[in-house]
Amino acid sequence: MLALVISLLASVSWGSTDFLAGLASRRVAVPVVLLGVEGVGLVLIGLVILATGESPPPAATLAQGAAAGVVGVTGLGLFFYALTLGKMGVVAPVSACGAALPAVVGLATGDPFSGALAVGLVCALAGIVLVSLEAEHEEQAHHTQRGGRAIAFALLAALGFGGYYVLFDGVADESVPWGLVAARGLPVIVLIGVVLVRRLTLPRGGVRGLIAGAGALDITATTLYGVALTQGSLSVVSVVGSLFPVTTVVLARVVLKERLRRVQAAGVVLALGGVALIAAGG
Picture 1: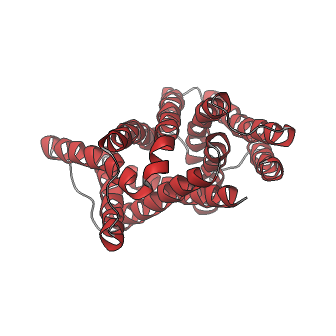
Picture 2 (picture 1 turned 60 degrees about the vertical axis):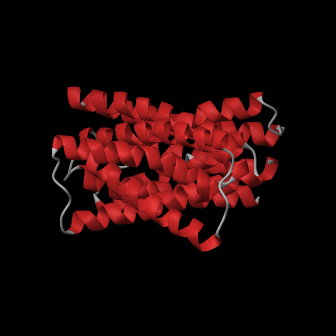
C-alpha cells in the first residue's frame, strides 16, 4: 500500500511537471527547457546529498544510473517537443503507454502476481490506451501533419520513459539520491553544450518560473518513484507512476480549456479503477 501511495504522488508530480514544462516549451527552445528542468533537479538532489552525507554507491550502479538518465532525458526531450506540436491532453496519455514495458519486465522477472493485481494492471494500461486511441483519432480527424508528428514523437517518448523505469529499478535499491545525480549529470553537461553551440535564447520573466517549478516537481517525482521502487514491485510502481496524464489532462482542461472527450474521461476512470484493484491485490 505504501508503494502505491508514493507512486500516486509521483504521478501527480510528474503530471504537474509536464504541464508547466509544456507551457514553457511553447515559448523557448526544448533544449533550454530540458536544461532548466534537469539542472534544477541536479542542484536540489545535490543539496540533499550534502545535507545527509550519503556515500556514493559502486561505480557500476552510477553507470546504470547514467544510462537511465540518458534514456530518460531523451524521452523527456521528445515528449516536450511533442507538446509543442499537439495538445497536452493528447500527447501526455500517448507517452504514458511506455508503462507497458516495465510492467512486462517486472512480471517476467518474478514480481508478485494475483488475480486482482493482474486485472488492475490491465485496467490501468487499458485506460491509458483508451485515452491514447481517442487522442490519435482526434488528431487524425483534423488531418494535420502536425498532429500526426505529435503522436509519433509521443510514442518515441513512451519508449524512453519505459526504458528509464526499467534501468532505474536496480539503481534505486542501492541509492536513490546518487542514482538521480548520475541520471542527471551527463544530460546536463550535454545540454549545456547544445545550448551554447546553438546559441539558444535563455528564458526570461515568467518562463523562468515555469521551468524552475517544473524542475522542482520533476526531481520530487523521480525521488518518490525511486523510493516507491524500494517498497514495491516494478510492475506495480511503473504502471501507477505512469498515471501522470490524468493530472496533465485535468490541468490542461481547467487552465487551457482543452476539451476532454467522453472516451478520454472513460479512460481516466478505468485507469483509476485499475489503481484501486492494484491496491487490493498488491
